[in-house]
Length: 219
Image 1 (cartoon, rainbow, N blue to C red):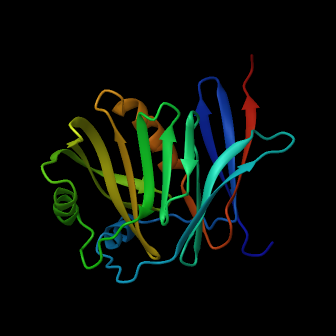
Image 2 (image 1 turned 90 degrees about the horizontal axis):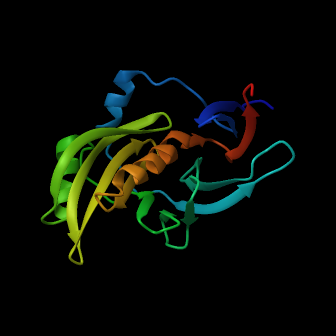
């Protein structure tokens, strides 16, 4: 099909290797300078956002849950990690939470119009959003072909200490916000799922379909 590409992503889990096929994607290499330019993108209009959770299965495939959504004219998807569930009931927001509710991952369009997308601006925005929070680390998040600044912070919610990683990723269709919130003790476990979400995130001009083929190595 003209203009229709398939991207293969290899996922290795223990002794099993999964081949993740995301169809309808536009795969391209991003230069470092292009990523730097993304940090200065200023978004003035919040794009439309719709999302749904779908399962794909079939002979030779693993049943897979994925969040599929549209951001303006773009289509995108990411795989829901094992032992996690996804909800799209809230408007303009996707929530992915562990079965024990100890780790919560959110994805939404960031509401930070008029700000530059650099680490200093993110830091100020976080401290306004989480008064009294302590920023512990600053890093970079990557999702698909995009990247942006992120921070780890410790804050108190209803008297309980929580740790959150929050990042903003500029794209041509809007500014994406990814976050993970957990207890400090459970944070490393939640971080694995968070990395899985970011690692499987892909965008395309048409609907993104997810298929996973399980391949076994020699016994």
